[in-house]
Image (cartoon, rainbow, N blue to C red):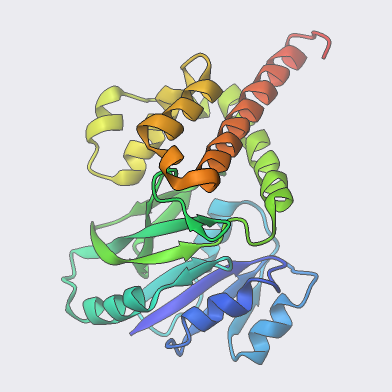
Length: 275
């Protein structure tokens, strides 16, 4: 009833656990970005269909992935460091058989973990559209890509787990250093703050539309790293997640600082000023 899609690049460590969590599926596809480790070998040993494509950006990679020859009309999308819970797996298989045609996607709550602790309060964006009807989804934006669904979006009660630090904090920092460079470029180009309104940020029906508008407004605020830290710690309640929550809030604030610093660096270079 449901196909599974996993995007990979050098995921030999996390892929086996991800595949174990969707072992109920008989149509698992991997779109691999030219891995140099044992990712492809592991997938083929597990009977998974593997397609290789040179990585040219997250939106284009995900859009290309949705063109794969899936067996079923519904696709559940995971990253290698994510796990479908048994409750979610059961719920998805039950609900797609009775979903009206107008509904073409479902948002699912993601649980981020650090040091074995669910970042229940610190996590900023818990819901993601991950169960979609083939032919009704499109992706855009280079970082934190936006999912556009042609149709209605429902919400499931089951959750999936994200082991964000499974490869260590150094890997997380390296990845977010790359992300911050892209965010800074988008900010300098004006793409990150274009067409943002408070009405969209608060009341847009589509979660991703609200998220983009909120991010655009946030980019216009002075002192963003400090604001983000305070918001995560005391409004979202990251402090209630203990040491893991406090550390995560610090990392996210540092990420915001990198975006701002790199953005200002770009402006200085354009103005011909010294670095």
